[in-house]
Amino acid sequence: MATDPRAFPPDVAALISFLASVRATSVASIALFGQSQNESQQMHLNNACPTGAETCSDVIATNVLLPLFPIAVLLALLFALPLTRFLPPRPRIGWALAVIGAVVYLNLATGTSTGSLLGPCISVIGIALARGKATYTARIV
Image (cartoon, rainbow, N blue to C red; front, top):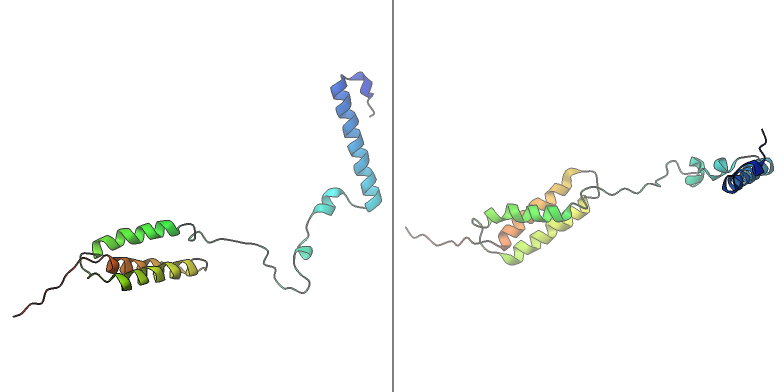
């Protein structure tokens, strides 16, 4: 079904001519290379993995716990505030524990275990020790 482009307005005629040239180019590339452009642009699984590899790790994933680190810090501060009344002030030990808890959280948050919850617990104890307000008086009986 051939249509004469002169029977249409100029913009429609230009569109018809363009589509005809695209179709001719596609037919020529199929005849020349034996496959369509869509088939040649697809990535096959055997091309993605190196030769001889049993599995291919071409997916990068980030655990949801990493972006939640600021919220974990805020929660550790909130949980540590009530504990400050009962613990003596030990800032050097406390801030060291808080930093260790943050490092534990960040290291274990990339894994699949629930061990990353250990980090905020260590941080809560550390912050409470660092900001401790309890004073002990010796009772002489």
